[in-house]
Image (tube, rainbow, N blue to C red; front, side, top):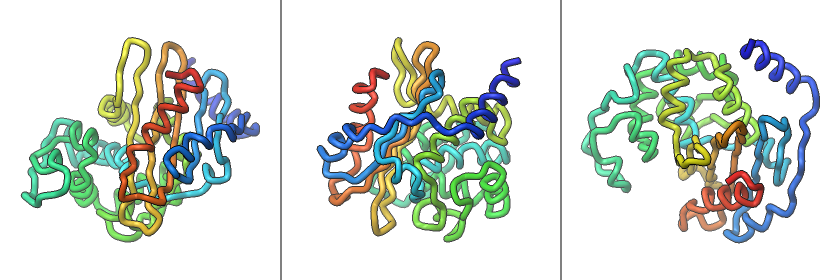
Amino acid sequence: MKSYLILVLLIVSSIYPQKVDERKDLKKYFDEYGHEGCFVLYDLNKDTYTKYNSKRCSERFIPASTFKIFNSLVGLETGVIKDEFEVFKWDSVKRFYDKWNQDIDMVNAFKYSAVWYYQELARRIGQEKMQKYISENHYGNEDISGGIDQFWLDGGLRISADEQIELLKKLYYNKLKFSQRSMDILKRIMIYEKSKEYIIRAKTGWALRVEDQIGWFVGYVEKGNDVYFFATNIESKKPEEGFVSRKEITFKILKVLDIL
């Protein structure tokens, strides 16, 4: 019965126009850090969207490390790794983040956004299988040109904030074309913050290798019987300062919207 209701909701949402509350007042949170950007939130129970800068929300950008959400699923589904605790041996190449310079499993590679781990994972998956899952699940523009271990960093893959939300909704509904086991494991490693009141499952992203550097923070909040999906996208005029603000902006907005 639950699966039937979920299917009906998905069909209805694809037929009828979105109920969107455009919040121009949220611009101040981006201005505070000197960023261009956009924000989209979907309230599952109310079936409504809250957006700032809707035009940008529909534009596609390189996913950077938010692709680790999808890459994890493909790695698990193909059996390239048996579970989230299988360790990849460090290649002894020193990188700028100390947490990356060690043998590491998927739990910690996701938590610390270890690029080398997910590049190795993609190489083991291979171009053909990766393209298969990308196409079956309609991830962004479905373009993985630029190298099997580069396409989400500086290659051809692009996704919009709106599409990030739809991907997360399908994950929550268990409607992605992956096994329940793979989706359950991903949901566990996605836990970003947990309290008595809520659970946040999320992933950051920072596109360093493209001319216009892009920051992401995407995920969803489970709070009692309510679920809220969010995606923040920013473009910094001062990327050398880092993109800590992608999270700060998101949390400020979630608090203003009485979600946190």
